[in-house]
Length: 372
Image (cartoon, rainbow, N blue to C red; front, side):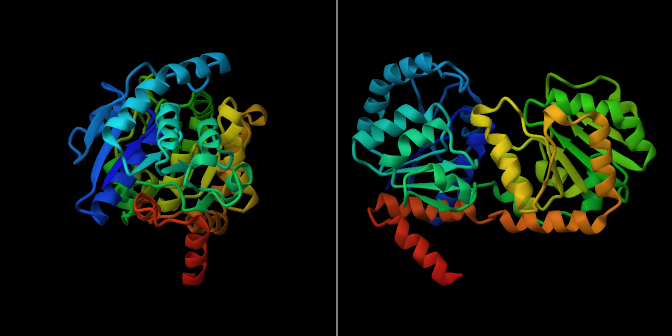
């Protein structure tokens, strides 16, 4: 059996794709996995030591923020090459995370009348998922709300796959010490995504002294381009461009201040965290706002809108959570209940069924309901 996986070019799409890849290999030793990606990109380096065959995708990627005409032109230009790849490798199923580079491959696989499984981690599905959903076998979603934007009977809530390392139990005190923090002090983790978030960086810098005076220590991932030199010299405020060990960072945190991207939310949920979400207001289709609003409505996170939130507002929100351990625990438990630590394995099982021509979304949902 041959499976092709494509991660879409960004970390938020690549890591879920790799999590499913690992689950596939654990389930089925004889499966051959092809990873479609860009040569020289992050996904290329991440798959070098994995038991997969990297298949270079031709052409240049188009930013998800590109204009409609440019995006359509790029898609039409890439479709012949994608068709050649699908015809050459004949994958039994294509697993696509919905990133822009998945579009041409997904269309080619559907034209060849072969199964396509889509992964959607946002409450509002992206353009690629909406385009491919009608011809796909299934769309595996993190939010039940995503199904309202998709063809009836096409979506199943599986959660958004996360790497297995996020499920391991890590002692908070040990995690804090690993970052040079005091093991028993109240800890705020600030994460702005892989590139950091200027709004979060500036806001926290404005209130850092007040936070430190109140007994809050800060682990602050600023992004590789936004690292404030010298901030780490302040005792109790540890800054870094990137954090390699995110499971330990989440374990160290009493409260997490972050954006509301799909991967970050799913990783936090599996880890267990009390979260203050400040959605990136310029995300495509405002999907981060939709993600955060869904979680706030269900009592799983605190939502602060960037346009109406001042540094003082953030200080008050953080202080309120610091002083209310019951509220923190309620948020942590509610978000963990939303998380799906076995998502990658469930998606892998669905993919193998689809590849064998044995998958039906309605039947899978009925079987899961009986099990629960």
